[in-house]
Length: 224
Image (tube, rainbow, N blue to C red):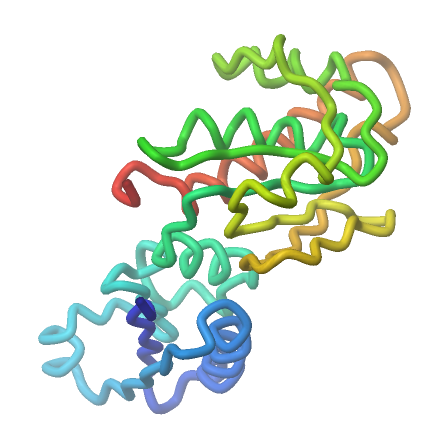
């Protein structure tokens, strides 16, 4: 089922065109059968009737993706995450090269947020080992990743993956050849961080927190 996507703008909004273009490009990639509606809101009376709080406002399945419109050009990841939430994938697979840090933390956070019947996995093209800092960073927010292991993405080619999120930044990300929704979030590799033990761990925390923010949109409780 195609999600309902609407962009609401005021006539004088300087970000209207960019927002409409960005939303349409992402919708065409993730939900090609979906038509993006555009509403130009004129006047305070119409704004009140539509509960329009600012330009631009992007609503997916009736929900303002930023919580309050008029915050600026919505980031690509937020539009992607909100559309994925509406599409309700049943098996989300996170990929990077080593499956040691970013994808492991994404798996842990994703599992903590996923509703019943939603599977969350991670893998890599060159699996190695789970970084102890990834386990520690997750433990700090109450997620036990002690039993996690690095896995090859070959393990998942025949298990019904319907959404793949790649997390590589500087590296060449694995290419998923199966039929699935595809999203790329280029996040820095905390395993490449230098400095003291605390500084390296803080790099893991920063990526963990960014993943938590994004996955709360994709897998939040009212998406069950």
